[in-house]
Amino acid sequence: MIEQSLRDALRAFVAERDWAQFHTPENLSKSISIEAAELLECFQWNTDAKSERVQAELADVLTYCLLLADRLGVDPEQIVREKLEQTRTKYPVDKARGRSNKYDEF
Image (cartoon, rainbow, N blue to C red):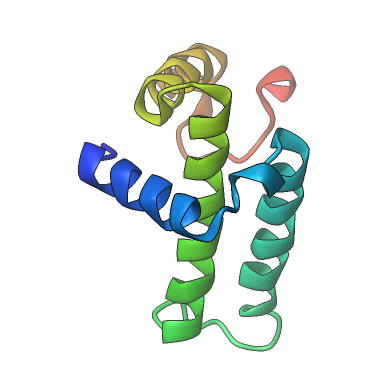
């Protein structure tokens, strides 16, 4: 899912700028939230999901998520797969297909 070369590129980018000192889990979590809000802002009055701005903001969200995972020492692919399995259990196809209800409302 996430290639090692991308992880290495992010680490090098941060190291070249000596930014790791600012990348606490708390700060990275805040940055994810801020960038997610900027992504959402792209859709406030427009629904063009293919715009360059949407892609740039999505890249920012993903970048901070990858940096946080790296800081926490977790493998993004592994935790996404584990969460998918948990969600698969909560939302079985026979109950969830075509519905947007929360799992405890089935």
